[in-house]
Length: 215
Length: 215
Image 1 (spheres, one colour):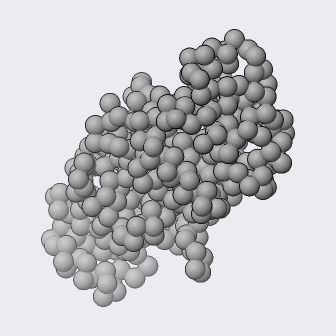
Image 2: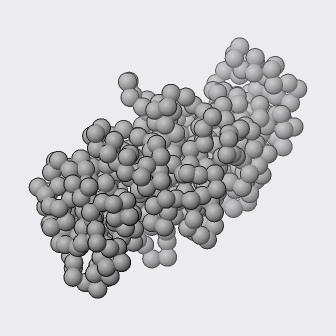
Image 3: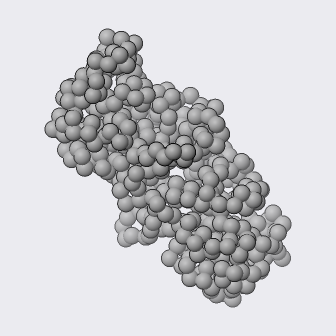
């Protein structure tokens, strides 16, 4: 599969390497595809990795991953071009975070809207699936926890797209992700990111993930 | 401890019985304290149980539990009387649910407000702690799950009140509840209720509870 990663932060680099290690061809897109950071990632990730502009990466992708900072997401998608992502599965791993001095991050929107829905509006013809947003990058690929595996939740309007993402998640070590329905399920998942962060602040570590116990 | 339960639905009756079984004196408050339903609960729960109006129950309580339907919460608290709850620990187990024909419930408010904050505004001198709202009534007392115990999260403005609630939760089988900070943490916990409901709809059962895996 040809995978386009939009964003070169820790989430994008981690998920990109995860896809490459599974045998997929991965292009990572950014405003500065020739930067040392990007080139170091390409070199480290190996022969299946390449870099490009946001537009080149979106055009290359069969499946795209959105892994930008929220503040740069709209412009990244404008540069990527909604047409280049039309019809494609777009995994939205972002969280609409507002960073505030001396406080935990907050959500820029919520309750009757969400980042996932905003992304779907920015990409009206893409098949957006919210995933990966409720855990830190260090545990996105092959999460290892006592009592695991943890659970991933997904939300999106297109059933086939969610089936694709469920297969990807299983390959990444998240078997049987829980489908919350339409993309408005992101209204529930984005607050869980904040809860994940507050838990981390409370315990002073970032090695935790949600599980739904069931009997 | 004298515990006042405001609300005679399944949550109120379950938590009331839980307190009585732990040896506390429990009064359950409602608009109709003489109703068959309430009297049956009192009889079944035993010598430590009694019933009263909302006002009698609030006055009786050292610790109160708010377990009303959201639509009746404001009027129940008006009947209870904010003065009767001033200075007291009030465990807010409610969720601000809006029920919609043929759809899962939604939240009446969120993002920059929450039911917990609304309850604190209605009871400005009480020490409100959000708890018990992320799991169904059947698993609120001594939850038994493979891989358990599950985790409970709490939020509230008063540290001592949260310590009291943490001790209560431990007695109820929820050791070491996770403190999310001020009552605005309810903004994160109330969406988790919806997620818990959607999960139940998806799997067709109501025997699940959240856990934070940690290593």
